[in-house]
Length: 466
Image 1 (tube, helix red, strand yellow):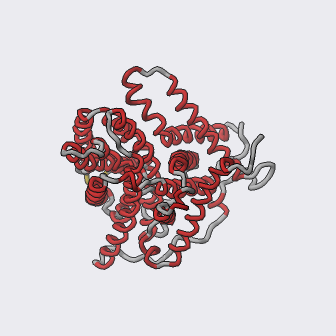
Image 2: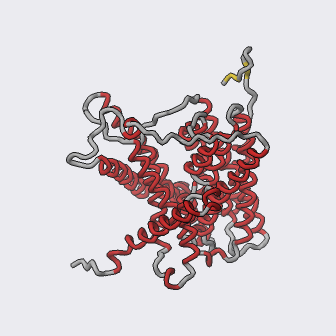
Image 3: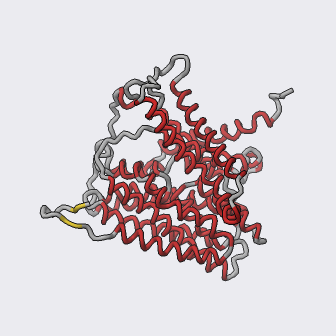
């Protein structure tokens, strides 16, 4: 007989209780303390840092469960990507297919650059006697900066397993999550400081208009949608769709795990399968969205079941929870001996990302280079929402194509970056593999840079021809 008075019956709810209390407290601080409000630091990051600061207290340390926080981070990442993939894409401003592809190339090439910078720190330090440092751990920089806490955790755990198999002790989850937390700080603070510098120099006009707060029914639902509340609530339908897709993700990953893929598959592919929950969620979500669209066009399905507004809210909630739980899962004690590589990786990664993204945006977006830069820099050090927060400061109504570039680049970025992601399973197998990975990444970066910085043809009117 189940005992509801047992602590185990409340274990998961207690973790969520800690998360929501920290979120509410952090949001209160951010709204009322000008310093935090001006910094543009996400409330979710402040909440995670609050838990992290309280964890050394003996009473509080027994409440926060590191393993559960890591599991929450993992699933929140996958569910958030599923919700985003299910959305019907509606654009508010024009952009071109080529610009979307080029933006995806910037994203993928920045991941490669971040990986090279990270390895340029961790490989030499390992060779010079870093006993607690794993040589391939520099590859966690693009996972933490470019992908966020979820992927930093996934690959951090994978790297820990490889290190343990080679007789080393490396706390990859804490190292990766620490990089992700630093990424949010870099994206927000560096972004705000640079924005203010540009404003003082007169290179950036201050736009006092706020994003429109006047919403119409079209912002909440499209024509032919199911009622908000009938035999089943519309929000319940969205949750069911998200969980259905995520259930299919589990079946896919579990099925792949049971298949014999040979030596390469067992050593390289299978360890990555469970870490790619966000990718499978995106692909299956897009497939389900396409299937629903076909059923609607053939009139087999009479009503529209997908609602973008609710899916946005589900994704936003998942990503907020992911950031809080991911930051709270960091164990500062496991970072002893890793502070030097952590600081070097994060600092050099920030400098390289800032310089490279600025150069790319100046080349690709001559008419809105700063809008493009702040949106991309925020995303490539935090998450897409951080990019949108920075962009809103200078383009509150999203009048430039920067916002659409950011949203639509996901698919080409995944296509460009997937072969590179496979290297995440190849590199940690040995130091030799890591050095081979460096060579491959240098070649890939050169190809992407050649595509991004290629010479454009100009028409007789003097405009660039795509």
